[in-house]
Length: 504
Image (tube, rainbow, N blue to C red; front, side, top):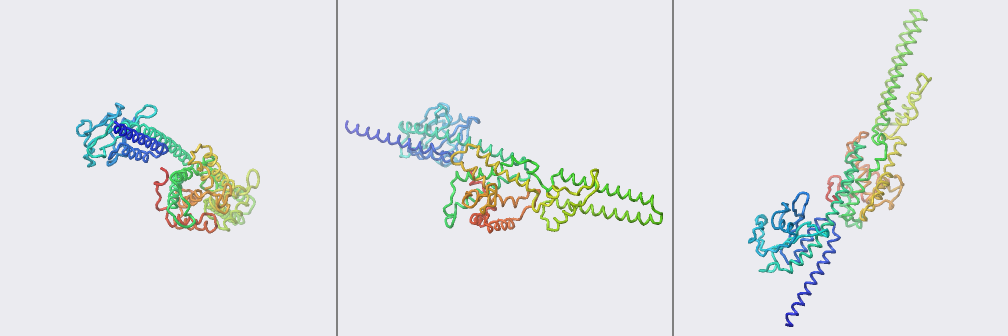
């Protein structure tokens, strides 16, 4: 009697230890948000709880009426109707099913064994019921590890207790995944909104995100030098990705005609200039005609012939000069670098006057001269200030999003992508250590993509070697991080971009 009590006490103690172990496992599972890793943990822990050789987990897809498995040990992913087989039976009945002889049960499908080459002797399948009393899937273990034994009632009880904890963890992970997909959709829609307003830079945000994540991954593999202590977790990589892909969202706050300005003069300004030159040409022709009529009325025939010829030559010369000026203005309107003489000629053209209904007026207004004299690009100082305001718009927008603890630095990282280490950037003119390393990486990638992109109407794509030379010059001027650029160039990040570490 004493021996039986001791054995019972020992058995109860082991059972208590197993239940305590299940609770510890449940705590660990509760914090895992990656569904794939969670399912792997559940299967491995279920196998240990029941003392089984193998295990599988099947999740119920209610919309499609199917059971699917992302992790089925010893086999590939499986998907089948939710009312089929042993798993389907357990979903329907919501009760455990313990089969001592697999091949002796007609509900068992031997095709899986044929596919995998694994021989199933016995199996235990239990429903995974959530706190809302909904079946979210089934947990199955195969072949009791102890030779010659099958799963008993204690295995069933323990696995059922474990499956309840697993159900809660899976439900949380599925909800997290659903929220993540929802947010990814929001991010994609946000980027789409940017590109809809500025189609010329389509794809820029995603390319910068991929470049920056790939650079971060390369930094993770450095174990010596100034970057040896810099590393990024998967969550930090995701944070970098969101910051990079949304870094230009503030462009929605920039007026569209400024955002897509391809030439120095806006289209309506150029139309006005060309119309003015057409008016000047007609005015010159009118004045020449009036001069010729006056000559005909007041001069002797012999004298008039020479004067008329001179008037015709003067008109031809003035029209040719006018046309040359018009062509030079059109050439100056294209965003290329003008030499010093070009600016001087523009000024000479601008101060010439023509006769209008309001009296003498200059060929070009002061605003038109200012725009045409832009030394690089197509933006006036006022235009550039408005374009630069997109950074502040981005920060203000991102700051309104209730980011999770792991993503809370997204606004800060995105805010500084146009800052330079020497304080010459914008909008805050921050310097050196004030700029996060994540932002420094994004700055390099942003500059590189802006230089090499072939979809900008206001500039030609710069070849890769030239783009790297320009970035190297930025390093020499202490505007860009030297070590990060070295990694970018030596690892040739631009040639091996990948989404694998971008948190997608």
